[in-house]
Image (cartoon, rainbow, N blue to C red):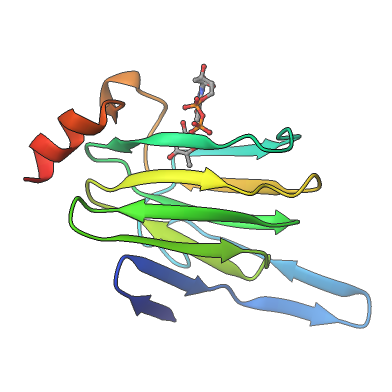
Length: 136
Ligand code: T46
């Protein structure tokens, strides 16, 4: 259930729907391709604001836009590709040393992130030149 297209790796999340509506369940190491250690979500992003602008040394993450929409740009040092996340049944898998930026948040955007590790500032690569050195 992975739709890989270059840097953009979309997971199709299984929707359990019935006449009441829909439910998506994400289980560590099953629907997620890593052991889940942390969940966070980004919401209330102000108009015109972009976020991210960093890479990670080893963190793996799946991003799910559970409400609204945003655009995620990925950059491996050679290619830059972006995708619009606007569906609660699509997960964007980001792994490896990949620069990420999030743009064009709708006012109702809730971006859910499932992460393979606890928060660790030492895992961040916040300088683009340092990122290029690492992937170069
Ligand atoms: C990523 C993109 C998609 C914590 O204390 N714990 C956490 O788990 C996280 C994620 C953040 N923070 C603190 C660190 C900062 O003081 O929350 C503040 C905002 O974090 P940051 O500026 O890193 O947020 P974004 O939206 O630029 O990036 C986040 C993740 O940090 C990052 O791993 O890949 O979302």
